[in-house]
Image 1 (cartoon, one colour):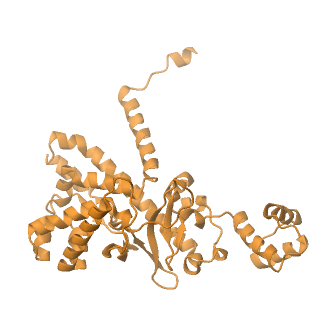
Image 2 (cartoon, one colour):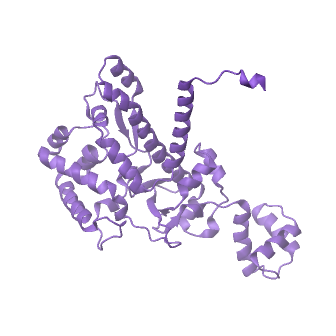
Image 3 (cartoon, rainbow, N blue to C red):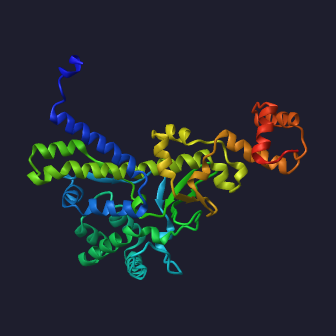
Amino acid sequence: MEKFQNAPSLRPELVSKQKQLLKNKVEVASILRVSPLQLAKMIAEVEEDPLFQKLFYSQSNQKVIHRKKFQKAALSSQFYELPENAPSAPPGVDVEQILESKKNLIQLIQKIGQVNFETYFLFNEGGHSLEEAAQECKITIPQAEEIRHLLNKIFVHDETFAPTQFQPAPGLHYSKVARILSEGPSDFSIAFHSPRMAQGLYDVDHQKLKELKKEKMFSLSEKKSLRDLLFQIHLINVMKNSLYQLILKIAEFQKDFIVANDRDTLHPLTQKEIASQIHLSPSSVCRLIFARSIETISGKEVPLELFFCSRKEWLKIRLEKLFSEEGKNWTDHRVVEFVREKYAIALSRRSINQYRKELGTAP
């Protein structure tokens, strides 16, 4: 006991640092479960921060933050369409006002062209100022301000324009995040319904940031808020990149199902396998897929959890079909032979008998 009593205690600054690290880990884990609405609000707060605007819209020699689009993702064409019927929306959201905002925005997009809109407003990878955007698009600065204002208003409620049709249980609201598009026989891309997701990631030039600090380009208050701003940017990047990588991997592993929409074409896939592919924990993958859905190539909406099944679940799907059709009266021995020849899976007759009990399909 004396040995522990005389042990040196941690310095207060180390304790504080450990607490902060623990808090950061908790926040990183929590960000994977935020809704599109929460993420859009979080991004809006970050981009309205004067310090962010200083680092994003500055001249090239002082620019620290850039945007970086995803390689295999774009904005869904549905964004450029007005819904025929008033879409559903969360309580407290004025749908008519949002529809009117989008109508006005589309009129401005038609005036400047979709390419200019995406280059100088939607993605704005170069961090063009309003003055530069107005000049390149041949519009006035007030018109450029209006486009940015309408975008910010719509961004927060972009989920409204891609409402989900999947309602598995009362009180559980799904978010339809994207549609898979075919780019060839075995290649896919992602069309995000959310413009915020389609914008991609923030790319922070940390070397440039160090140089600006040495040159004393930041006030005392900016220095104090810089760490928090960078951490918020990190959280947003974690959420966006994790969801992007997850959907890409699902499309890669389950391409047969995405093309055919036939449950029999699903391959055995676990959350643990996907987690190792995208360098996340299985619990993080579980948070990511919760209450989210995507559209297959044909437009069918599918919850993300449907793409995952263990080998046992996968085999049960096939045995259930077999027991309801040609193998209804097969013996366990014949089923064992069939499974070995067709699926290269070795099972015992006892295992087959257990599957029959679970499926309620005794011969």
